[in-house]
Image (cartoon, rainbow, N blue to C red):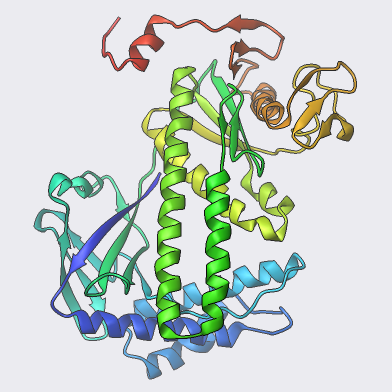
Length: 412
């Protein structure tokens, strides 16, 4: 299980951190220059790039060893991302590090939760930074720093658009969680797509129209500002990007919350998505923003669901959009845009809703083939549950579910 906690920082030695960020960006760019090839035949292996640029970065910057390693890793990852675009037939320009951000880990960042501060490695040695916390929840981060969570890679970002160029710590945290294998689970399938951001097998539809609208408006304005090429235009783009990203993340958080609540209302044990790598492969280039949104939504659903004891899994989605969720007949012509009509049995419904049911059914089939599943489980529908053998149970509110839904705690 992973979390990221955002904390505003206040410090006296701001110039030391600003210079560290500046040199870190230069180290990232040096790594890119070493690995980049205009024909797409890039070298993005971190260990190879580290051998070739580590000494040069150490000689030309004041960064300590661990920060140099993190900069090389970030540069290598940027080259790798462009290489994957090349390999899929897309164009990609050489990465250019302009964002004021620096990567830290537990060797370069120490956190003292009781004192509400941290120490940070800079080009001038370690500096102290105090947490600037909201009055209404000034200890919200402590639950993640009780010893059960491990600090992983974190980042510190400088926000130029705020007064005094504020710094924020994005603290990365991770811990292992034990998965419970349900003997007779209720499964809810979720289909992700461009017509509907998400659709569940219980018949819940989540639209993403406003996300698309905001993104298109941002791209249009960014294009106009980039033509100006001024520092003011660059800062405006950065402010707009931050604002658009915050809006998108907030929207996806709200959708993920509703999706998990839908699972709770239907007494679901497992939420099932299609494997996200297949979405990436089939999504056209101009729709790659959706891939980012799908990944974010999945991450948010995953941690919200696990907090409520609900598992989240992925399955191979092949044929889930072509298969009839009623009779099982699979044919390309079954689907026509956002409509689905089975050529064999005539079953007709929304195509995304049909795919969501098939995603849940596919997980049940996978469990049936495994020794752990033993063929048990049922698919959550908007009107009840359905087992693979065709046994249907209509919806009813059990005492346990009623109490959970209305927030009443009672032992039976």
